[in-house]
Length: 281
Image (cartoon, rainbow, N blue to C red; front, top):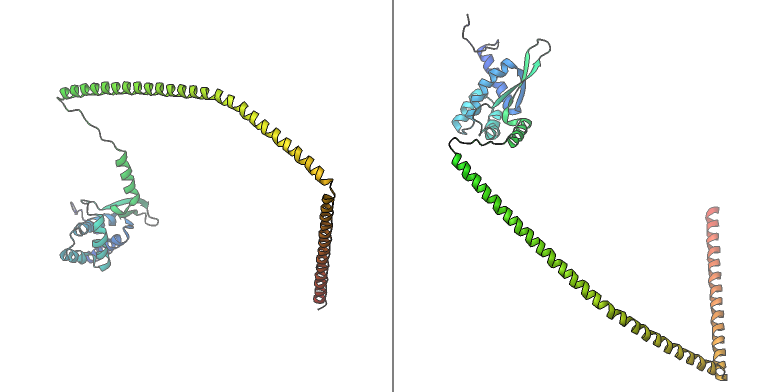
């Protein structure tokens, strides 16, 4: 009878069982999560966690001991170089078993076994919970005097804050009064300046009107003088010369325009001939 015999042989001989557990341990170290049955996962947890604890002391002896169990250089290197840094602050409990239900066929209980420090989602949830949690302080027995003192201090601080608030309010009122006085003074200065400006404006308008009248008189005088000059024969001769010059300029302009039109017509005819030749080709 097997009374009190808790060791699970997993239906295998001793060398077969040791080889299977070493392979599962090395694959767990390399991949950080594997899927297996619950019985194998519980046996693997007892097998691999002492090796993880051993990896915290990176010495030649500990590497040789771990290699005697795993028999895989790559898994030993990953364990001592990567995994040991992650689990350095954890005092045991390096693996987690997550049940996934029954397997089709033999209906065996299946699960995931993983390294706790490599499940980032659960680590983020824990950090969020710790941030939300708040500490509570309990009142110690026999601390009534301290409570009274604290109440007195609170009342004194509240009175001091009220006094400071009142002084600040008085200062604000004084500042408002000073600003109102300044605004009144500015308005009075503006009102004093306005009549002087009103008196200056008609004087300026009168000066402008006098200047306009003087300019009109001078213009009339000039027009009269020009009319007198035009009556003279010398002025007529100058006018005739100017007219002849204007007529000559207009004739030259018309000739230039005709020349330009003729040149454009010749260019168009040449272009048309070229296009016709190209079409014939």
